[in-house]
Image 1: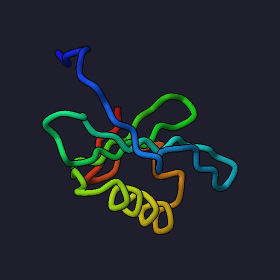
Image 2 (image 1 turned 90 degrees about the horizontal axis):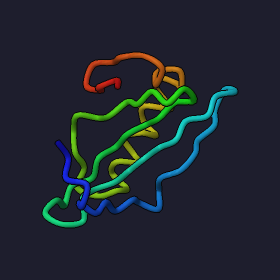
Image 3 (image 1 turned 30 degrees about the vertical axis):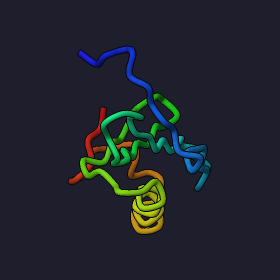
Length: 88
């Protein structure tokens, strides 16, 4: 169970991204204490969540991974399971 007292830092690179008539929210975050790596998560219009298994040294690296995936695979990728990504 996640400790509710943990403080999460959200990257200023987080935000809404629209493409091909669809909008997703890019969430880049890390725990304030004890974790230096960043988590990348994309939430679709139905609340489905795609989380990268890899962690990133910087929030810019996390956003670059999202952008590369968006450019290569398209925004519809975030509606289904893909290797290296975990869909919730």
